[in-house]
Length: 313
Image (cartoon, rainbow, N blue to C red; front, side, top):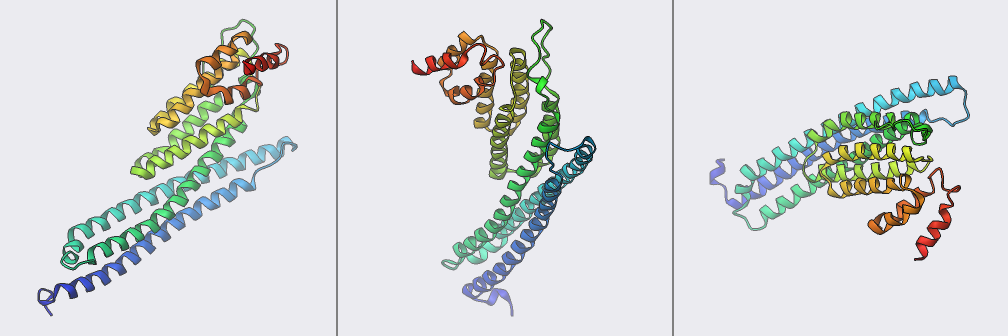
């Protein structure tokens, strides 16, 4: 039978049924592909967890664990890349499907009231299923990245990085080794994310990663004690991290790292000048109060009593 001889309602019904089957198949195919890529992320996470050890172990055990953790980190980076490529392919497939609907299917459905909106709704539902699978994997990707950042912080950051003796020698203006390693890692691993993600997926992924990185660094630095020259070194690290996250194009993240740079001044200024920091930037008060207690002269300079006076004003 010639399709041209069919009534528009018949054509619309048949096209609608066939397109619904196509949507189901494409949605299932893409979701299963993302799930397979996510399984690789799960395996890498299990490998990381397997080699977490305590602090009271022999050097030999620690060295063996460190080597195994390097292997796990490599597996995590590989799975991250694989998932990003899977997301990129899904994005391309969805775009082709949407273009096919717009160019071919729409004109066959438009003559019949309700057929086109109904098909649009079906397509939206199918795409949402794929996006949900992608979202789960992207969160796992952030977990993968932050696990490696935390491993590098733990293995590369030394107490002497931020508590260098103030013996009159010129301060070290270079970033710490931990910072250099982390920025190099992030630059390398996120290269594929910058090209694979687009639109809201890219924006939300980078914003969430930026927030997690900021929080992780804050928690990490609270494990250390800072001398004035160590405070300068910290500011150099913060500048390095801040310069990198500017590539995220996320103003809220830029602001957080800019404020961190101001907070780091609590380690550099003389005790009697601390009050002026709060007056100039009230928004840093919460973090600054936590950081001040990490000064190496916190007790000897009786800073606690100064703070009580500042807070009572």
